Length: 278
Length: 270
Image (cartoon, rainbow over all chains, first blue to last red):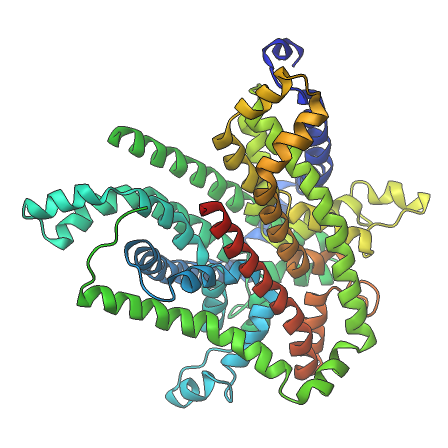
């Protein structure tokens, strides 16, 4: 790194590099390495037996299925919220804008407590749903509700800034040239926001996969039916079955890496799209 | 900002729909927390809050935040300074590593610490004979909290510092300021609101972290229970009033976080 020093006009390279490397190594890399070592020391057949057990497969199904539904809901609602917040001026807009961040600010355990109380058979929502045969608490529907709530902001916050940048003049020209509203949306707006939209959906999906606090309150945690991967890991820890916990955690870690790479690629795509336009 | 489009019936319908969703999914839950917390009156509420275990959970939660937030503020500034003011080999990798904790499930965050400091972990068997027990102590809670909020401050500062550029700082240096003078008189005032915002977000996450903390804390009543764990414990004891009282303190912090965020954003736009 010394060869770079001559190029640096500003001070503090050594100090900030030292602090950063020390911290990242100690707080992030060392713990991650410890877990990877644990998994690596396990042997392939053992690892495979754990991650492909019936209970694990059922947990993947519940987790991924619920996260997918939650992401679709948040995709639609997030697009609506982003559109309304950027395109219209109306009383209460700032309040609505601030409210969108609530699921980020509210601890997940509080969210779980509230949801399970709302959907209780005597709760504010449950008393209307249960007589109609809709049971939310202790079913997969509850998991979907918890995942949806905790990841509401992702799509909104991904799409909003991009939507603000889409040139309204461009749209007005298209309209005067005879394009319908739908054409303007599908030809001009949609292509511009698509990378950000998908990026927001990926983040929302990743968050839902890892969500634990809100889900444990409402899921009921029946193996095979409402048991998510995070909870199965937690149960294995309680049983002192550290190998199984490590193997399952590794699966979630790989998925996290994949989403991180995907979001970076999508961000690059967005940049390329903007540059092509300009 | 774009000029608003003339509003049509469809637009009004969309605005209405957005409010209905936000009302049902966001406002009603907040109303429920406070109405359940105060359902049996102020005396009962204070009684639930002042219960020793809950009080200790509040203490431990605040203590954790008081340790974690300043550390991550300092490190966040160092990280942002490094990646926005210099170019060096491995810069992309460094940025990716900072972002890692945000992508990792809280349970996995707890697990990685267990496999470092636990009985069967990498360092646990070395540290324990020296009398240094990390797992299931407040120290473990501090460490996982550092981990899960590692990206927050840098995330706010990096775009801000990139956008501001280095002109001010170079001017200060050319006028004879030393490195620390430049930092305290130029850099810090320029980034203070971003830094405050990053700290507010870090604080909210530290105080509310559940999954990671529940793996490493051991959940010992009155010893290593933070507020979110205490809420879960009271709920499992069917102590609904107690759990809502504990939840209301965290909900209040969430509301304050949002108010501060809006205020800082309004300030920035001026």
